[in-house]
Structure formats: C-alpha cells, structure tokens
Image (tube, rainbow, N blue to C red; front, side, top):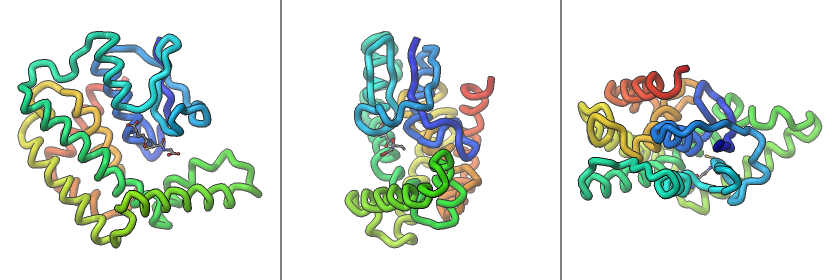
Length: 232
Ligand SMILES: N[C@@H](CCC(=O)N[C@@H](CS)C(=O)NCC(=O)O)C(=O)O
C-alpha cells in the first residue's frame, strides 16, 4: 500500500498544497490505491510535502513521485502524446510550479486578511501562548523565501500581472479540449489541476482568481476533474 504524506483538506480543497493535489491525481490517474497520512511533515526528507512511502521506499517531491510511478508500475502518463506535446506539457507544468506557485504563496501568506482566513489555520494545534510567536516566525520565513526567489520583490500589482499572464496562457492552451493535450489527461494535467483548483478557491481574495473565473474552460476543467477523480 502506498502512503501519501499530505497536509489535509483546507480551504475547500482536496489539500492545502497544489503539489499534494498533483500527487493525489497522479496516483489516481495511474489507478494506484493509497492512504493519506497527515502527520508526516516533520519527517519529510526534503522538508516539504508531498512524499510517499511505497512499501518502504520513500519518495519525496511530486515530480519524483511521478517518475517512481512510471518506473515501478510502468504507467505512462503521457501515452499517445507526440514528443512536441510532451515537451510542451513539461514546460506548462514547470510554469505552474516555478512561477505561478509564488503568486499563490504571496496571496495566501503576505496579505493579512488572506493569511488570517488561510495559513493561520495551520497553527491551530500550537498551544495558545506560543501560537502567535510560531505563526510570526514561519510567516517571516515564507516572506524571506519569496524575496530570495525574486517574486516577492515585485509589487502586489506586478505579481498579479505575472500570475494573470500564466492564467491567460493556461486558458489559451486548454482551449476547447477536455484536458491539456486532448481528450485524455496527461501527466501535466495533475499539476495544472492542482494550481487551477487552488487558485479558484473563493477563500482568498486576489485579482488572479477573477481573472481565472472569467475563463469558463478553466472552471469547467476544474469541475470535470473534481467530478471524475475527487468525488466518492
Ligand atoms: N518541488 C516540490 C515542492 C513541494 C512544496 O513546495 N511543498 C510546500 C507546500 S506547497 C511545502 O511543503 N512547504 C513547507 C515548507 O517549505 O516548509 C514538489 O514538487 O513536491
């Protein structure tokens, strides 16, 4: 049995992290049953979630989880795609993970109201006298990462413009298709769904969400995958 280490469902989402949602969907695409463990963060080999334990083999990072599934179970997430489509799918995935992701982090962690409605919940199990101290420390760490990566050096308005450009690109690429590369999901759909669903949650206020909501193909895509893979 595969154990997926996750944060848990927050903000009306299958998980607080788009990367965990991606890993869930990769496992579902591959038809591999798994159980979730929401207490693995402190033992995460790379200090991040997701990671899996597959019969004693620990695999951290959503992309390495994908590679593991492909190698161990012989599942081809991109079956039927031309080399050019595979390359484009990879580039789209990395746009979400390495660019759009930082907008999500900034929206949730830097805006006081969004933080109070969102990430503040992660600290509810910390005893009250310590809670504010831990919360402030972690929030400062996240802001430092945003600075180090560079996205955090832009104004909020500039960040929104960059993220909206990603959203427009995703909407254009998806077009009238059911999935990114056609009528069947490919590996990158796991990532794109993780980000689209996370961006569309009504919990957080941002200019990026309405920009995504204006594209019915994106909301339909979210609903289609939710219906097909996340409703029991
Ligand atoms: N490259 C990693 C990224 C995973 C990641 O950034 N996870 C974040 C949540 S969205 C995390 O665990 N952050 C906790 C931390 O950095 O302390 C993957 O694809 O799995």
